[in-house]
Length: 61
Image (cartoon, rainbow, N blue to C red; front, side, top):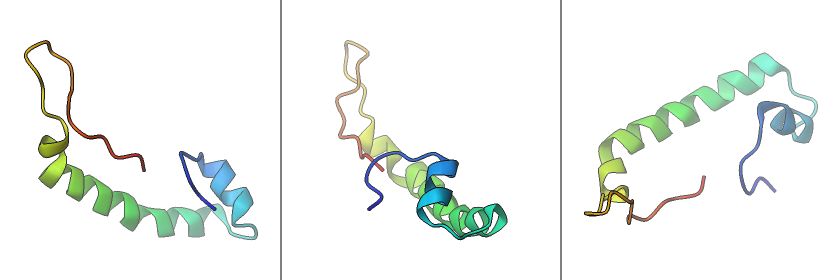
């Protein structure tokens, strides 16, 4: 149902009826967990090569 990148308004329309405050409150813990995970494991995903390009595996959220 929610594959790919979505804007706040798109999520809100798909989850109708939900208030902007409620949606924000529910998304904040998810973003906090994603930030923490990126800080801990992100370096494994972004291995820089000699040419300056990224060769690591990227996750699509």
